[in-house]
Length: 187
Length: 166
Image (tube, rainbow over all chains, first blue to last red; front, side, top):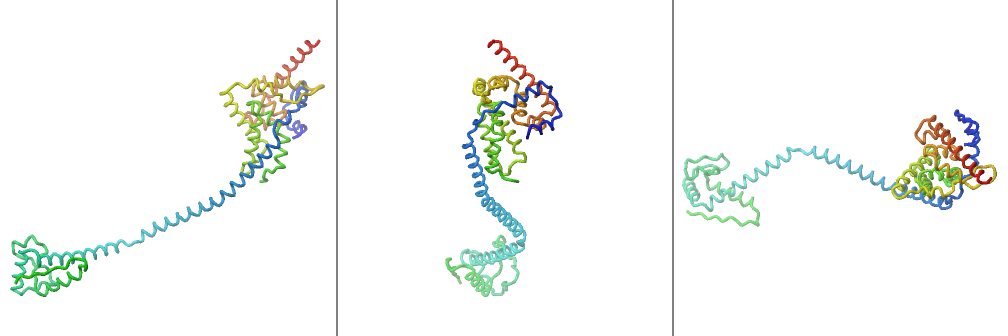
């Protein structure tokens, strides 16, 4: 900006003696070579180059970070929406099947135990086999009046056919690795 | 916006380098480092400022004030400052450079800063007011008061010298 521009812009007027003094002050030249020009230009160029390098190296990393963030966000959305679509009914059905299978397995096991281990149950079995008039397989369990079996919820009358059926189910449900059930009948 | 190339940087150094050094020297005794750091900061800018010169003066001012605070905790640097000439020693009708430096140093910082900005920084009073953070009339008042005090002290000094010589 030239001095003429200065004088045009100024609304403030100095007294004449101060204007003269101002002009004399302006004639004082500033000390040159206070700045190491070559060093400053070199450092400035290096700073500019570092700035460019920083921008160039930071660009791909920023893009990669943004892409990974987007992928993560989309996966999260998919996970949330996908988990809400899982039918709870299916799990309940599976649970029911498992329960059903477990119940059948338990029934077979208990009946096998009845058949093989307990002396009182063997007595009961002998009595039922002797009568040979029960048709319990496939029907509802028949509550028995016997005091020894009132605390036995799975008790039901057996027939030779039902025993064979139980044995078949038992052998079918147990894996071959398990110890085979030994049947011992006292007749 | 145009990037700051070596040509523009060179021109900035030629036109404002010395004035920036003098401006920084109003606060600290390492003005060259302050100005150099300001130029480095300018080159590290992602996009150059709108008013590069104004930006440089502002950065120099802030950094010089920060340095002066750090220096004041360490040592008093007034003696070093006076010993270093601000102006080229001239002969003839112009003012005594050494005397001008000494008397200018004795002015309050508010007046000294505005005189430096106005005379050697070639700022308008509007620019000075914006940079210093005062009103235009306030800047002008400080300037006139400082100029008057400086003139008086330099006249007194020259009279005393004249008396001594005679």
